[in-house]
Image 1 (tube, rainbow, N blue to C red):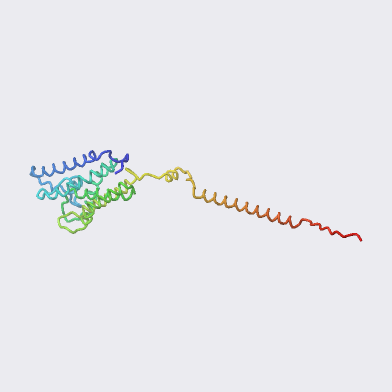
Image 2 (cartoon, rainbow, N blue to C red):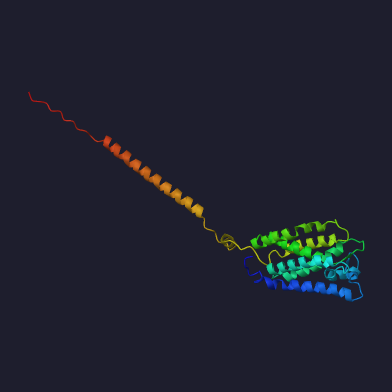
Amino acid sequence: MRQDPYFESRLLPSFRPAFVVLIVMWLVYWADFIFTTDFQRYGLIALDQKGLRGIVLMPWIHAHNDIKHILNNSLPTFLLLGLLFYSYKTVAWRVFLLSWLGTGILLWLIGGSNGAVHIGMSGVIYALAGFLFASGVLRGYLPLQALSLFIIFLYGSMIWGVFPTQPRVSWQGHLSGLIVGVVLAFIYRKQGPQRPKYQYEIEKELGIEPPDFEGDLRRALEAEAQALAEQEAQALAETKAKSAAEQSTTIVVYDYKKND
């Protein structure tokens, strides 16, 4: 990506926050084995007062009896957070925190009343993917549009996760995350990297009338054509006047007669 004051200057520092988040995820997963308390009980339960704590705790808890759960969430979390902090460094922390809490709040409202416990980082992953894709499209900035295409290439199939196609998979959490990510893209569309403005756009904002090169050329050609027409008309008038003068000249004819 081209350098922009809103972009992180180097790629490596932008992945440090992602690495910290990843470490916390795995520390919580490891602690779930050490303590006798089952951490899954602290997950989010929709429309349940006790389940409200899951809004904060849900992303950090993964099924301790299925390591695939945290493994499947680790790489997308690391990659999407790294890209977020690289491309949108000025708003990255706000987007991450709002993705985290916003996804939990929306899931608590729409997750149903069946008593299911929602855990895992996948909702936040959907929020980050939704933000990165929608933000690149909204801004119309080539490097961010390329990032949107990259997200589609890697995680385009994630869209099926917002439908109830698999048992024991929180499709409501995925849907909540996607909605929150797109909404955040609209909220922060004026912050962070923006498409560079062309000269005529800047002049228009400043109230400066841009030069009308095409109009100037057209007027110059019209003036030249008019001057040429006037010259031709003047020459024609002179020719007619000369011809008329020649025709009106008195001709004297002398007749000579011999004297008788």
